[in-house]
Image (cartoon, rainbow, N blue to C red; front, side, top):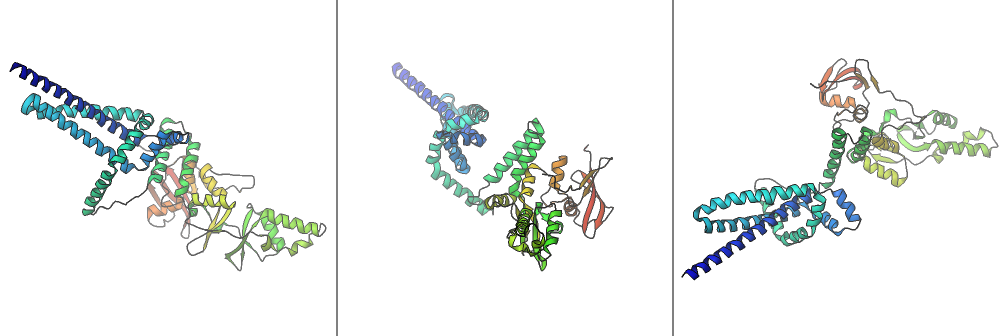
Length: 444
């Protein structure tokens, strides 16, 4: 009898040890799932991409896993829930055999502490601090888990979408927002290093952010408006055309015929001078041959682009066509302005001035700390010059911003306060605000 009791006790003790070992193993697996989730979501994709380019298979697996984040998180959550539930069930069974009816409460308390510390906080803290290393180590087993649970993940996603659909909530299937999120992540990192640590200079920040913004800005925001474009009548006398080109600060000038809206070509100053030189040489050094000049024959064909084209797309078009100049039209084909390659580059590097540029006066700092600003000055230029943070989503010029905020065309003498600035209307011509006084307000 005593022998049988001893054998039963030994078997019971051995079974308890195996159960405890199984619980410890499941907690270890839960910690691996939690750490892998944190590592793969916090990993620096730029570093991983560099490792992949250098031939790392693990890095390529990480990229493949993170490209489909919904499936990755779904598979990890399913695996983590399975091992946590199994570990809790085993712990409850073990506690009941050891402590009787009070074992349920004991198992709940002990497992809560163990899961929180060893399966959540500890592995996630390590993974967050060593995201690249942990993600590379976890890439192979997690890839297997994702493949194993893929049918279950798809079924769960379907059930979730169907359930939300009952309540009128629709999730777009296969919506990709990674490009926008990546841009915002990069912009956030640049701003953090500029404003918090100061490791990124303002000029560098402006250039980096300017490059990122090209895809979100349209040609209409930076083009030269048609009222400021110098255009020439193609039917004017050649001598008059030559003099006008020589006096102009621009090297490319649109030509019109019959009416200014009818652009028939674009003359380049160098092409014109080469043609004049050729005529003079042909006539033995005289200027008489210039009157025979046909400017249309040496003009370039005009290139028209929609005003809604993004600056990023227009930059690619300029580079692919090896062109520097385009005329901007609206949806009805009406001329709106012109844009050059230099205009787009200036959005990245700031104003580019050479010895032939006409100095444009648009902003004057007053002795009292205010700024006298022309209405046509762009918000982006003001933000770049003075490190302001005026919004430019609804308007591109400072006058447009005031009109948008006031929801009306203000009169001279009116004042407005918004976005931390005071705006006084100095002058207005017809429906156009021509000059404002801007005063940054001190924040208390």
